[in-house]
Length: 273
Image (cartoon, rainbow, N blue to C red; front, side, top):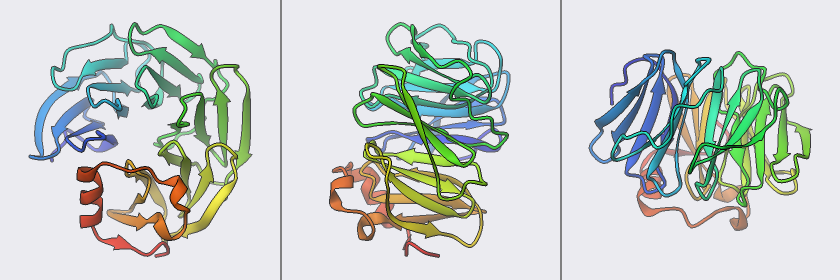
């Protein structure tokens, strides 16, 4: 797969059929994951730092680092816009809720918003609260499995926002001096900072399992749909960790055969490397 520039964001559909990438060539590109062919793309005025695919694998949200009309929602097979362009300046992250009825965007300095997937209505706006205040390229958003909480990562901490009653709480991560990058399957959060990854229970906010360490800084992470496999981008390498030996089975979903099979086909390394 050859993107139009440096890839800044990537998402894989839960059925394993589609990949969407965002790059500094100002494009969001939909790829056929089975053939590696480019299917279509959307063009922006600035780099695309945030992409995600809905859980039913039919919709894409992609956002750039512009000040206006920079959030697009479109059909993954048709490429047709599903909503008029939405404005939320300097976006670092975008994520669909587990049921796909909402999506959230988070800005570098103006907080996060939750929108209706059906009509684009703003359902929640945190203002400046919840901003990442980060100059790093991160994926700072994750939802709880019930869709009631949004987790926002920033330097040294994770903040949980309850979108139904506007309450919030925060807790320090294992490396308080580094910017955090998070991924979640709705049951637990994987949080990388510096050269290590910690794991957190979504409901209790307690750290679970052991710290996963690398010898170099981690630039990005992702979880397979079940949560069993953790991918870490370290320099120009991707390391796949099998988490079954460090987390109880209750934290893993059933996954999807195609995605899980592909994870197993990659070289799975020990949890410390």
